[in-house]
Length: 272
Length: 264
Image 1 (cartoon, rainbow over the protein chains, first blue to last red):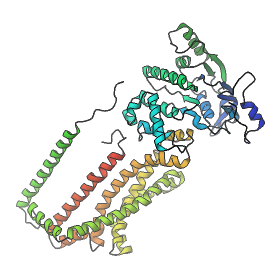
Image 2: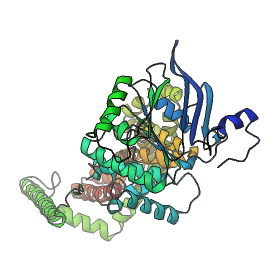
Image 3: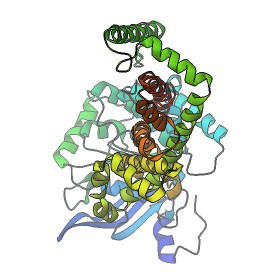
Image 4: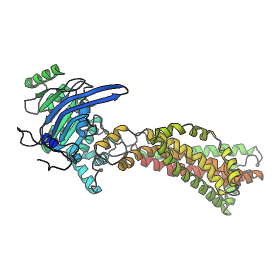
């Protein structure tokens, strides 16, 4: 899946973003030497230092670390809404600056961020309104995606009429409606109760199998990371850098009571 | 999955109860009025019967409809002008922090100036004309609309802006799809307030600066000690305002903002 070279990319970026020696195809996401410093008045706070991370296509990767370790900033850098001070972001084998297919990258926030004046289906349609897709086509695709998250019965309900879990499903549908190849998630289920969160985990894994997406998610919950991810990247606190990458071997679906799963949870707990 | 949709109220029954209560209230008010009028000369407090006759008279000779129309037209023009200037100015002050801070004291000052003072200025500047009433309505309604729209721009959720940014939505679409729907309820409540105030101050303006309209007729009737006609004009005005407010503005607002939890 090599992108044709464009004039925007210089040769250095091309080699950085194209598949490595041991890879068949370009990784979905590759971060090379990312630095980020925020200024707060006279203070300069380095958030990220020399972050390197490779996310293989169709895998699920968890980013875990204490709060303030720069996980969310890193996700925003991948999404292209925060610019790194130094380093290179590659998306699907293209340099982030030259990448122009952002509708193939979905972003799910910590909050559901549903527009209160729009019904569930119109909230899902919102993600399609950037482009020039016809209204009838938008509605058709939004309804299809609501069916995917099993919420088509509530298409015309306003956000205030929905429970927390349902709102989360609408937010997920809004990410999925553009048919992304990469799904970025910033602690998306942290505000849900334990039972609803478990349901959303199942939902996410089912859709991941169905749509063969790449998922990069941020969490501070060791159990969540262990249950969902193929690999967990542990970020050390400020300045954030990848401390270790842990491959979670047991096949999904996993259970926190499985001994081979709890081993990984203990390992991750020791790391952060 | 249990339904979290709120239970539908027995809406028809509720409406009927409400209608009954309102009717009872009107009957009680008219009864008190009638009883009070029995012991007082009719030029001080005319009874319901006398006022009804006066009302029939002005309705039959066309006086009622002409003046009501003129007043309504003046209020509407002043109000529309206020909305057309107030909405962009409010957005501008909200969007530009420096301008907002600079002009902030102007609004409370404008709001404290009595409409009677605006009416006097209007007579000096425009004489006895339509412009006098329109000006007074405009000067009263505009600060109210600006204040509300301004408040609306401040309540735009930064999280929604970031969402649009992640979706690579162009700026003008963010304006129409995020800013406008946020501001609209504020604009609407400002407009409703402004319309109500506009009605009231239009009468003040017409009383002293006009040769037509309900306000002018009211003063004329008072000068001639035709208290029954004063009551007839007042009554039609109250009914008309209540009809516009509850029959038009409120339903439109309820429909537009049905996504709000406490709208009903």
